[in-house]
Length: 138
Image 1 (cartoon, rainbow, N blue to C red):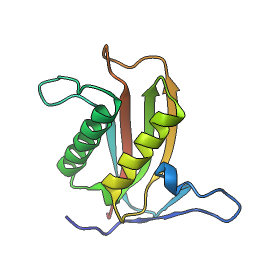
Image 2: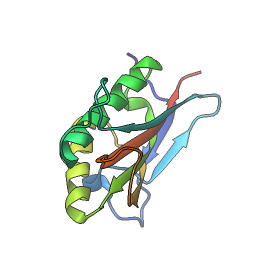
Image 3: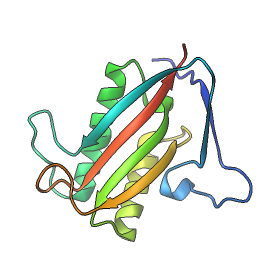
């Protein structure tokens, strides 16, 4: 899959370094790009079974995200924006998520991201959900 992306990610001077938390502050998207919207992916497998525990659900949700992106002709390099929902959010969960996100993205620049603490998600026991906006060359 092509790593060519029609946008640039940056962290402008005057803003703190978000890299440890797994995101960038700004995505500048080229005109004429194709947009791919990925619905919220949770920590359930193809049979609908939730992984056990927060970190396991994050790992499964990231795997689900990669599968959804691939079905749309994209990969993690094409993701410009993430929205993350975390049940019972804490600093510990933020650090666990940031570490797993950084591991998934590896040497790629991490996308912009908004994290929203929530009381509950769609399924009983669901602790994490991630949605993405990706851009592909026209």
